[in-house]
Image (cartoon, rainbow, N blue to C red; front, side, top):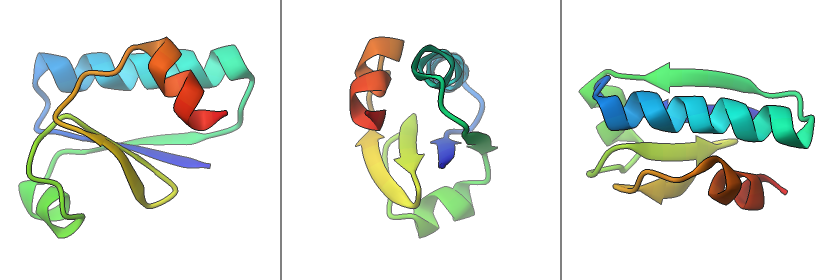
Length: 76
């Protein structure tokens, strides 16, 4: 599983990344977590609002800071 956190490095983006890591650990999943900070790459994925969460190439959330439990629900 590949999880991407899209954002320019703002506090919300960093928190979303930490919450994604916590959700992966909680569920015992094997996942690669990547931070995408280049605005061109973010726009190429069709995302206009950050932070965004992408799982295996599919945008799951955009413009919202999800909690670890919300991310866990998306991943399970």
